[in-house]
Length: 472
Ligand SMILES: Cc1cc2nc3c(=O)[nH]c(=O)nc-3n(C[C@H](O)[C@H](O)[C@H](O)COP(=O)(O)OP(=O)(O)OC[C@H]3O[C@@H](n4cnc5c(N)ncnc54)[C@H](O)[C@@H]3O)c2cc1C
Ligand SMILES: [Mg+2]
Image 1: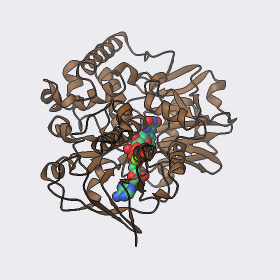
Image 2: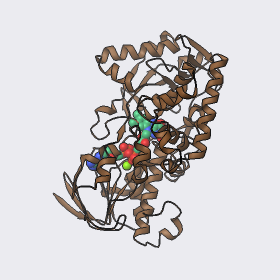
Image 3: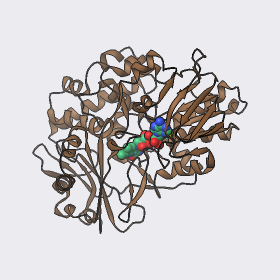
Image 4: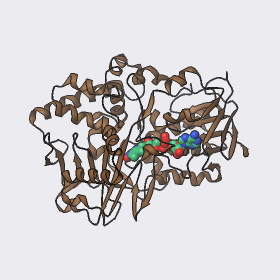
């Protein structure tokens, strides 16, 4: 076992950990990043499968994600717009495909009015509560103790409207059934994207992609860090000095499979559901023991189907499809930059994912392609490349896209989720305000965490950079 000494040890080489490490290194500190997998990038993962380059994990960039956009620029990465010409498809209450243009689903006028009412209500709450401290709002407890499912139905008696609005946050974002998380958690999701209206506008939230793939953000950061990134090194044990002031430098020792790092700070840049995979010596305090049992990952299958041509475009379709009641609830054109082939990406979330995972691989593929054909016709049945992500089976993630609190957890624990434990700090997209659950939030958290450490060390490099969250 190799033993080394650094100023900061970062656990996890996803976008959050690598951003933190990079900023700390730029400020002159010595860092080591310990990564469990044999690759960097975490929940961003660009791979070539049967000759097709696919984004197995996070990929889209929206215009408000300014921390990610600035980092892309700094790393010399370019973006391109998602294809969105032509008409979208909506599956109506009877499951029939209906073509439409713009943002407005082709529902009955009554359903439309009920959807508009719910969107306005959610926009108002998101603006008033904001993404930073939803737990501190006077209505936090009230909104955190009712499920999003029941909150919607308390505010509208139109089932189609409730199902459509529910889809955007439940299957579409938190990837848990709407009865499993609170209205406050849904409001945080909306506020983190600027508003609920932004979140339901696919041309905003799913605006651009990175040419060559999102994983390059992590790969380029890791290149700069060179030998200080240790792959294949899950951290098993973290020793920390009990009784030290929270957020102040101390003595930590992170023990991975092939290397042990002694440092003054440890940054846990892993999703919150994985904190408990590490043994802490001494154990973490009561509050963290409790809190970490209430943060769990959602589940979604991201399906790629590649065709010889983007056949839907020739039929005047954008490839964008929605159907709250269908097995596949969303489809988008996911054709790569300057690729003559056409790629669709389709999503199967939460309980529907559970159901298809009970089938054989062949039955699952047939069920998913048949659901896609329900929107786009028979041509969807025969892709030349077909791939289903399986993040739930990945030991170092265990779901997709991200972690959220169970019912009542956000107002109960949220205020302590970023409080350091001695010299241990927490950094994850799943703890972010702006960019919550997104790569942008991972980058913001990484930058905030680096700033807190530099502040605590009284580094002169922070005098100009210090504008964000103060160290606790
Ligand atoms: C299918 C899918 C689609 C998504 N789509 C989008 C999208 O379109 N746009 C968007 O912005 N976001 C998207 N996301 C979310 C985005 O990928 C994440 O928010 C982001 O990757 C989180 O970064 P992170 O660094 O906080 O955590 P992660 O990316 O999860 O990185 C954590 C790292 O820690 C490592 N690790 C875990 N435990 C240990 C340990 N004990 N020791 C050492 N290392 C450990 C893991 O291997 C991993 O590399 C998507 C995610 C998924 C799964
Ligand atoms: Mg990370």
